[in-house]
Structures are given as structure tokens and as C-alpha cells.
Length: 476
Ligand code: NAD
Image (cartoon, rainbow, N blue to C red; front, side, top):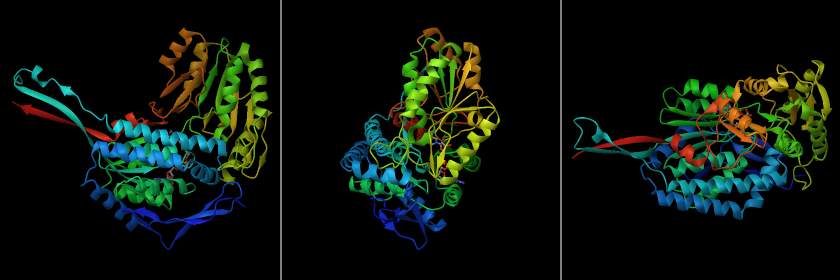
């Protein structure tokens, strides 16, 4: 039995909880027992929430008030950190130690958003430099976009929600959040917490239920001014195709590469790759998936990687010792199992792992892979890392770039020239030198190129996406 009691959640609309007749179960991902029920929104609920969000814009909060509310929210989250971490571990299947880190980071995201609320500024524009405009002055201000629909994925359901609501509120917008249906509880708890922190009714609404239907109703509603989406490329592309001329920010998938050059600290590289390939059972958008090791370093690297990975404990996420919990659904673990089996049939060698027990999938290392296997070409989003070799710098840069994605990449080298060549030529939103692809702190600009999306997160950068620049010209 899970330690969390079954709780019933309503939709959070205009500061009230609206429990609908139709319900959806939320499962404990380890025991598969029902841990909570959520309400299922209809089109009318969605329209009502959007209207409420629009109304709330009529009573704008001052930047300082936004700062205070976001700081207070962070403080309340930290006070309740263990409760949130336990719920997160149950609803995602994320190991408890990792869940605690997510809560701490989510509080940081709110704090950084609060700080940024005080720094939203435009710039002077020297219109007087144009002939005939000598008596004019101009400047810009940044104004809120308005009503923002935020749609979030299952894997990081507290911090990624904070990466949307923090900057949106800091910039003076209202938000209608649609969390992932399999992991919505923490988002609903955040709504309670933000209300307690003093957020006025309507500024933040949480709508739960069927993702595709709610997505459609939000897209149909012309009072939504912007969509900020984190999730799969398939849904991201659909949202962009339907959003028309409205703003869209997309944080999508990746098949992240990490390069280990011959001159790197190979032990450090193996240890960091072992940690960052299997966090949250590999269900992280910058999880290390493809590792390219220069031939001279390969034997040492693979032995050390196996040794580090063998230490990882698979099991109950609520157990303090666990490093890897279940995948989000049984069918996802079965998909990963099929992809690994297919790769082996195509000539890959299973260096470690490869076994499934229900939704638990062992940390798995494949060698002798080629770039067209699904485990390399597509996003695995599971605890599987593939290791291949390369000879030259040009060859490995081409291999990293031979992907439809481009979120982040890692590069272990002490050769400054190679690092800078890679910085110029590797097609990604972020290159991490002497760490794996999966490095992130919450104030850095974060976002991809190619099919990994567009627009940046990190509160300062998200605020740029979530505001419009308005020009004021004075004829003096
Ligand atoms: P998903 O695309 O299946 O779902 C994401 C959200 O979209 C959910 O809330 C879902 O209910 C909703 N949704 C589903 N159909 C919709 C529709 N037709 N219209 C509007 N919304 C709809 O993704 P997921 O399985 O929850 O998450 C995994 C994916 O997210 C991976 O591809 C991963 O790389 C990506 N991801 C990216 C980042 C990033 O920052 N780049 C971070 C985390 C996850």
C-alpha cells in the first residue's frame, strides 16, 4: 500500500474548487493502486477558466506584489517540501531523493521568477537620430501577453509547471494550466499553495482531464493569447499548426548526445554519464542517450560506465536507496524493451541490463550500435544509453548533428580548441563542456533548435517570450 491516501481533486477555477461528476484516476506508478482522483473538464469549464483568467487581467498586480506572492509561494513550497516530494515520488514513480531535488529546484524557479519580476524593462530608442525626428524621444516597455495556456508533460510535474507559472505571473499574465493527466496532483497542490501566498482569484487556473480534448478547446478559444508547451514533438507540432498567429513557445524532445574525447577525464565522464542517463528512469528530455567515445578512450570508458551503472538500485521510489523507479506506464517500458530487442537483432551488443519487470526497466547499456537504430535515431525516453566510437573531431560533430533534435549536448575534453570548434558547429540550444548533456540550473536559458522546439525557458528568458515590446514615441 502506498503511504498517500486517495484524495479527490476538483478543477481550480477562479479561486474555487469545482469537483465534476466525471472523474479520472491517478495511479501510484509503483503499486498501480489509485492514489487520487481528478475532475474531468468539459469545454464549458475550459471557456469559463479562460474568461476568469481574462477578467483577472483587469486588476493588474504591481511588479512588487508579484515578487512578494512568488517569494511567499517558494517559502510555502519549502515548508511543505517533504509532503510534495512524497506525492511526486508516488505520482511519477520518481525516486524520493530525486523528487526532493525537484522540489528544491522548483522553489528556486519561483524565487528566480520573483526576482525577475522586479527587472522587466524596455530600452531607450534613439529616434532623434533620424532626419526630421530631432525633437522626438522614444523608449520601449514590456507588457504582458495576456492569457497564457500552459501545457506540461508528466516527467517533471512540479519544476516544469513552475517554469511556466513563475515567469508568466512575474510578467503580469494570467495562466490556464493543463498538467499531464497521469501526474496532475502536484500542480493542483501548487494552486492551493499559490492561493495561500495571496495570488488573486483567476490569475492561475488549473484544468484537468483529457489532454487532447482540453488542448483542442484551448486552441479554439480566441481569448488565449499564447501557448507555452512542454512535451512531445508530435503534440508541439499540432499546437503550432492550430495556434494561428498567436505566440507559441515549444520545449520538445531530444536524443541527447554526449562526446568523450581521448584527452578527457574518462573516470569523471563515466561517472557523470552513469548518473545522467538514468535519472527518472531516463524520462528526462536531456537524458544522455547517445555517447560517442574516441577510440583510444573507449575500453576504459565502457568498463567504468558499466561499473558505475551496476551500482544503481532499481525499485520502489519511496525507498531511500532507490536510484531508478518504474517508467510512467507499463506500455512505455514494453516499448523500450522492444526497441532494445530490435537493436540487438540488428547487431547491437547488450553490455548491461536489458531486463524488464513490469514497468521497471533495468539501466541498460548498448554498444556496437549504428546511428539508424531506433535507440539512437529516435527519443528513447527510458533508461537506455548507447555507446559508439569515433576517430576524428569532424566525424563526431557530424554524428551529433545527424539528428532531427537539438536541445543540449555534452562534451568531455580538455582541448580548448576542440571545445570551441564544437561550440561553433554543434547544432543545439546548449553545449555543456566537461559534463553530460543533462546539466541544467534553473536560471540559465534553456531550449532547443530543430525539432527540439523554439523559445527559451529560464525565468528571465521565458519572460521575454511572455511579454510584448511596446514602443512609446514622444513628439516634444
Ligand atoms: P505529451 O506530448 O504526450 O504530453 C504533454 C502534454 O500535452 C500533456 O499535458 C498532455 O495531456 C498534453 N496533450 C496531449 N495531447 C494534446 C493535444 N492534442 N493538444 C494539446 N495538448 C495535448 O508528452 P509527455 O509524454 O507528457 O512528455 C514526454 C515528452 O516531453 C518527451 O518528448 C520529452 O522530451 C518532452 N519534454 C521536453 C522538455 C523540454 O524542456 N524540452 C522537458 C520535459 C519533457
